[in-house]
Amino acid sequence: MRTRGNGRLIHEIFLLKKKRKALILAHNYQRPEVQDVADFTGDSLELSLVAAKSGNPVIVFCGVKFMAETAAILCPGKTILLPARDAGCALADMATAEGLRKLKKKHPRALTVAYVNTSAEVKAESDICCTSANAVKIVASLDPKRPVIFVSDRNLGRYVSEKLRRDLILWDGFCPTHALLTPSDIMAAKRKYRGAKVMAHPECRFETLELADYAGGTAGMLKYVREDKKAASYIVGTEAGMIHRLRKENPGKEFYLASDNLVCPMMKLITLEDVRRSLAELRYRVAVKPTLRTKARKAIAAMLAIF
Image (cartoon, rainbow, N blue to C red; front, side, top):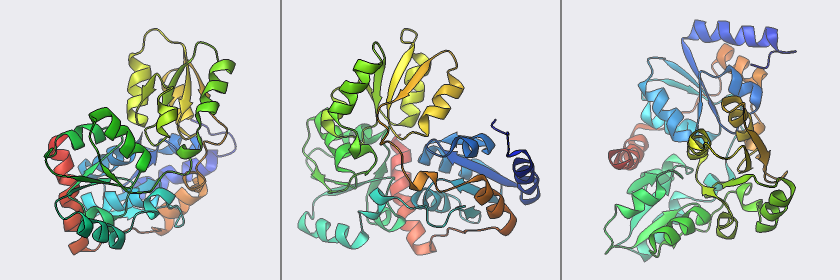
């Protein structure tokens, strides 16, 4: 754990966590020091499921708003805190419930698959959710005779479409951070780090994914590296925060960021001081209205029944 210069602050966080009977969760893209004070680090759905299974009445979710919303959907009765109120997600903001309703009217027979990186309102308008890890499996499980609307990441949607050889109606949304990673970036990284395997997130452009040895979400990357007995170095094509956990869990291997552009400003908003203040003042609370929560939960439950 990184305690240099933060020892007193970390101590206060642990005392407040005990007082509040709180659970601290951190996404893999968070600052290293925030990851290090968390009880669990993982991807968004994984963390929400941990929150739901825990007996803790207070959940401090170090991530972005849609993640805290998902936890609130799965954890009725618990206090869900997002330490930085402005920690949003550009990808999630690109999809709206109103826009999705209009698209569904154009395709009345279509089933709607909502990426977890969407708001509670969008999830409530969808038939089933998916993650980057299970998107192919979820779409493959749907009636092949019915059209499928895939919201909101067009790059992940195209990845699924290519894998299944199935046309999808793609929402025109994208992750601004992952979309910056180009084939040229990958080729430059491969020349610089010769022999390193390339891992890339499915939110990257399809042309970029074609150059990767492995395409998958953060949990998949961790598993891929853990089980790979041959390679000693990896080029990482996802948000920079992932490098910290990869190095922490695989001390005998080397990891290099595929591009200096892979930094999400929203994922870097939460600081240790924000975590301390969130616990001290129980701020900022994230809640989902009961009627909306019930509808959104059905789409998540449909996914969990398959995955």
